Image 1 (spheres, rainbow, N blue to C red):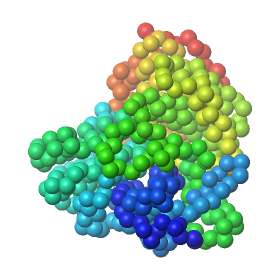
Image 2 (image 1 turned 90 degrees about the vertical axis):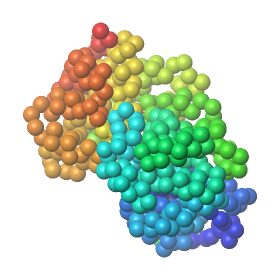
Image 3 (image 1 turned 180 degrees about the vertical axis):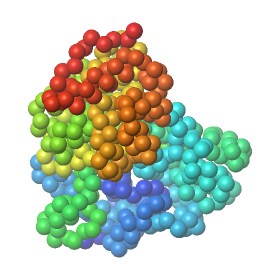
Image 4 (image 1 turned 90 degrees about the horizontal axis):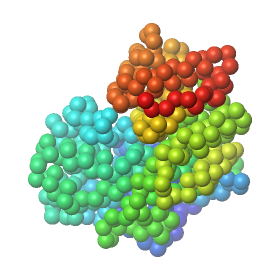
Length: 467
């Protein structure tokens, strides 16, 4: 694999927790574009759980192939990672966070990796947080590591690093900031005040459809480039990184690499979570029930694609207005991306962690629709499909990838699974869980999806409004 020209000059300015496929196809690509002109921003990759990716990066000297899948596929080598830390290397991770040359600490650890409660605050009863509060010098959670790293910087009289969450959560930076401060308050109130006053946690929006790496991709890279790459990644041509414009002086020039620096990240975040991610989850849970495998397959189902497009234009977009974004154009672009046959994005992958994703992707939209008197029958369909997906996986003894897997499995195997799951406060806020119309709409959608003609769920009545 050809080494980029900047590699001999590369130093480390970013630490990243969670070097999975999305980070390596997205953030690392943006950073890679900076490095020829400014090689200070090499990335130290940290995995707290699984050493597999770290070991593979080490074996390939940090190099891997990025395949851009569009009408024509292009390939290039990414070489932005120059240090690698796996589980059991706590002292080395701590030393890297202390390095004053490190300006950014970024993360893609999925929503569950932030150890947040249902209300978005730190879950102090989470086993990882309990451990870290008892043993703060040997953290196992991202929040614990950020608090320790910032404490070390403060003790050394160094500037704090900027923590950038690159996971799909509403107000992701704000939630991470509050979690770290809440954690620090329990250990050292002075540290908590210093973090609150000095450290920055910008909100962000990240977007690019990134399928999981599989043998199909490895074979494609081998055939087209002649490189036997164990860890290639692929994504669509479209990529978006919106970052709140609060980075301190001396930070990498992300705008020059194509990132959008914005004072209103919230508008971008809501559009992405509700339109793109909401449609994705809808396609995933309904598509899997109908036997589809990928997003493109599901979009090829004319009845399903028409339903999801109507859901977005009629039920989701109105909850986002007014907006500084051209929402109809954004919607059209989203569905064009979904139809890209070169992207083999598995619905099963999108279906992971539904209990964490659906509150932001669909339930917030439903709550807004109820508050404004709009119908919710269509919006209830993806919720019903998720519950039936959980029920099917649980009763078949198949794996359910979800932080609430044990509880969901137990609920789904019992009688009245729908009613029992709708009572789960970790997923459904009280204002919806006790809402008789919401529960009725979900039950009605589930009955249609269970019927001999599940597409009957695609034409629900529009008569339900807020009482």
